[in-house]
Amino acid sequence: MLENLTLKEASAGIREKKFKPSELAAAMMDRAEKQNADLNVYITTTRTEAEKLAKEADARQEKGELLGLLDGVPGALKDIINTQGVLTTSASKILSNFVPPYNATVAEKLFNAGLVLTGKTNTDEFACGGSTEYSAYGPTRNPWDFSRVAGGSSGGSAAAVAAQSAYYSIGTDTGGSIRLPAAFCGVSGLKVTYGRVSRSGVTAMASSLDTIGPFAKTVEDLAMILQTIAGSDMKDSTTPRVAVPDYSSGLNSDLQGLKIGVPKEYFVEGLDPEVEKIVRAAMVDYEKLGAKLVPISLPYTKYAVAIYYIIMPAELSANLARYDGIRFGLKPEGEVTDIVEQYYKTRDQGFGQEVKRRILTGNYVLSAGYFDAYYRKAMKVRTLIKADFENAFKEVDVIMTPVSPGVAFKVGEKSNDPLAMYLEDAFTIPASMAGIPGLSVPCGFNSNGLPVGLQILAPQFAEDLLLKVGHQYQMHTDWHKKFPAL
Ligand code: GLN
Image (tube, rainbow, N blue to C red; front, side, top):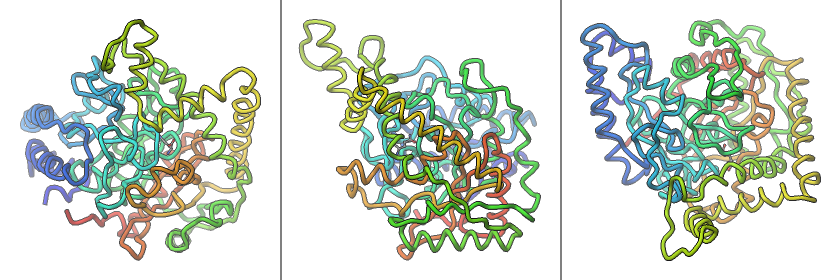
């Protein structure tokens, strides 16, 4: 079955002329369109674009002029990534009619490498959430259990890979938005080092934290995608000129002597005992592969969520100030008599409740008199969290933790309880604060058949190490080979 292939297998099949890119595209689009009624993975499916791009790839295949390993393979992009001529809503009503005039750098790089776009995936509005329930276009459902969330905010991107309507997808991770949905949907997801992938043309959420990264069925596939999207970009001044290594070539060396830090602060009350058992079993598997487990402490972990919900809204409120309905986006309903009223109405009608909550918080913590007490203090704590990791990486090579305290929860279970929702990211936010990369790999299923994820963290720009550590696990386990029957 074409849908069961990994990205690597699809790529090899194209090169060996076993099938045409247009056949893969048709298979993916049929699934994407059929599943969307139940799963709501895509805000927009793009059959017309997919057919056109696949035909061009067919021609290159025929002539033996394929652009590279990704050429002709169907993939999906989160709907906060600008795509020229294709609706990009950021899952908000305020951008419900926004068709970007240019491609984001990440989209441009992938199109240049032969991406066949299946569609624009659902997300929480402006990536603000952990379940994809805060989308103006309705929640994405978990392919393993339709009554549950897919995780968020890149829930659509994770679910597209799990539901096998795309061989890979791109999401963003500001506080956990790739790692959490990867874990909830049972796929592999990579949050890169801050600055490793250009953010140009991707709707900004919290600019000092935003990162862009891939989802796929295997870690080996993630390496292929990262190879294409990583690197410095003139259009994003936060992308340093750090060399991009060959991510695939290092995957096969063994883990003999690898030191894995196990932070005690991530195995605390509130962690689902079944999740703990499964994650600890994965670590024992690593010991069998020659790694050594080292107990460590990251003492400032407990402040991470609290300071994230100061820093993130501060930056978000500044970034969202540009949506005023004047240059692009929603025009308000009803009479407006002056420009100020137009701003009020556009933003009142255009933003959802959670985004409004964050704008208010952000403006509050930045306002005169509160800036020092909240924002500046939070930034100081952020430095301490970063130092926690720097100290730990003097002793160990990587750190392993659960991705989240629990498995995918029910749709509606936490959507009216912001605090419960925010705590889902307790284990992913610290790495975001430190700007380090993190990988989420499937490591088992709970007694209800729901996937559990293992989080692996490494020092800045050590994606090559992370990918090797993830790949070696997948060479010896089968969790990543399981998919829901759809
Ligand atoms: N769940 C977190 C939030 O709601 C993280 C979001 C993200 O990484 N984009 O802010």
